[in-house]
Image 1: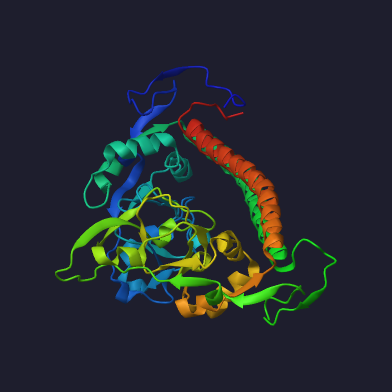
Image 2: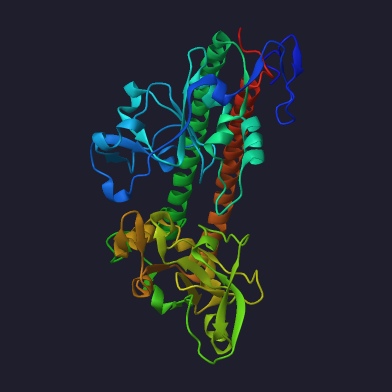
Length: 444
């Protein structure tokens, strides 16, 4: 934070998690800033939710930046919720689930709102700023205090009394206003930079997908004679290529389900892959679960090197995504929501896997999937009918080498931009922490 000066003098705060504070600041407990402190919200059953009325704010409705989510909003009858209606500048803190989530209410922005029981309401006296307090809840020091205050039960929680007794490093009101105005401005600037970089990441991802799709469906020779593929969403392909259904080049194998009764058969417990392990183009093996299975079924479900793993479904972005199994775990099987596509010729593994990244394959998966709200799944039968474009083997290898080379460049650039996003996010968090605890002087 060398860009911003320090205060001329500091004093010990008396709190190990906070350290020194500017000499003219005070430490006050949250309850001493309030005219109304630690008021729990209403416990209303979901059966009473309406499509219109007073907005009922739950912890899940508040995002990490203190904004209200527009999706999934619920409402209540006003007469049933009068005592829980919020007033301007009330601040809510979550006491269970996602701890420490905070929200400052403004009627002109949010309309008439009430709040739920897992949120605690604090109404500040004149002379204290809810916006300053909100930014304090985004500081590392608040997180440090929270970890000391948390009560470990089924889920971590911090009750209203603990929040009320939370020590706050507090400058005079004019300085509170200067700090939150500074942070409003600087975080907006940083958020705009982050958004631009995230937009670039999205564009690079689109370019990557388009590059793979064009190479897989048209090859590398732009002068080659084309023919109709016979598949509407695939279009034309080089005249000397073939198109075959997946079932003619590979076996689609279903996985095992949990909770089966094996009777008196001998059972063993072995690792198995779930949808969460199968990412788009790679396997996440940081958390591999185990499952009980009959010993005589192990050969049926054991993965082999070269199997192409594809997800049955989940969110739309998970549909059909996959990766090649290279034997990372000696003996491993897969669950029934993950297909193991076993090519008849092991050399086809990389090609089949690459096809799953193409726009035409993703279009096919969505078109043939069974869909519900934000979820989709594809059956083994429909997966078997996926059109597979097949250039001659030597040409196929050249295309794969080209894709590997070009996507490596794009991936390196994407990683660099992501690193920039992470640094900006870290700087944003550090700037908030430094400003609300007096480590930097932003009054000027």
